[in-house]
Length: 113
Length: 116
Image (cartoon, rainbow over all chains, first blue to last red; front, side, top):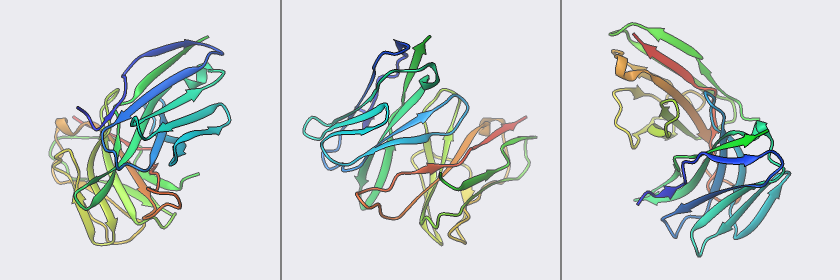
């Protein structure tokens, strides 16, 4: 089992719909969770951080965290073709004495006009 | 907006050459990282540093080396480039501690390396 798991997709949604991206993680001690967006050929860009259970909203983006179930999700409302990208989930984990950020393999989102 | 810079943006070089990929950040971040990523594939951590004179190897074995003589500078060197080193190299930095937890990484624009 991977430490941070994401469905690779592609997830295809029509323009204007809600895109739901999911991520599960293995370490119950994880406290910090991030969503990055990566366009093809570009570097990852931070779009959301979440540290507490519940929802965190920022514009069209909502991150949802459930530590008991060890999953974090990202909702994108009113999806636009410009949202088409790979979305990376990142979770902090302790490996020995070192606190590291572990990335999932990413979910490819395709928003159809 | 994160201020982390990588040069060159693109590099095409012949086999056997020594190359250095530059990475600098102006945010005073203690932590810096190098990732390797092939097109459409996942990120692989190859080196990281939590401060000056501190460097560690990452999860993916790499023939490259790094140095951290100054807080703002984290160059990556390949002594003898090979076609298998062809990839995108991404530098990132983060603060030592975040206000709420682990501080997020901020990425540079990357260097796309092609070894012929």
